[in-house]
Image 1 (cartoon, rainbow, N blue to C red):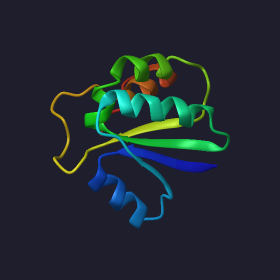
Image 2 (cartoon, helix red, strand yellow; image 1 turned 30 degrees about the horizontal axis):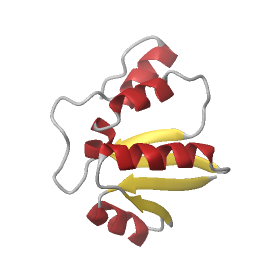
Image 3 (cartoon, rainbow, N blue to C red; image 1 turned 120 degrees about the horizontal axis):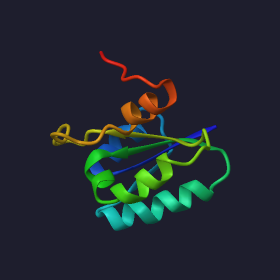
Length: 106
C-alpha cells in the first residue's frame, strides 16, 4: 500500500523529506478535492494525508467519503505550518465512535 499526501508547499516538502514520495501541492480546497478524487481512483493507495486547512475546503466531500463502508484508503488530517484549526471536526474520532459505539477519550 502506498501513502499519498495533499498539502501546502511547505507541508508537502516536509512529508517528502520523511519519505512520502506521492505528495501533491494544492492551493485551494477545489485543487485538493480534484487531487483527492484522483488518488481515490489510483490503485494501491492505502493512506491519504491531507492538511486540515485544505480539508476544510472540501469538508462535504470528506464527510461523504467517511460514510462509505470501504476500509481503504484511510484519510488522516494533519495540521499545516500554522498549527491545528480550532474546533475542527475530527473525522477519526467520528469514525471510531461509529465503529465502537462509544467515544474514545485520551
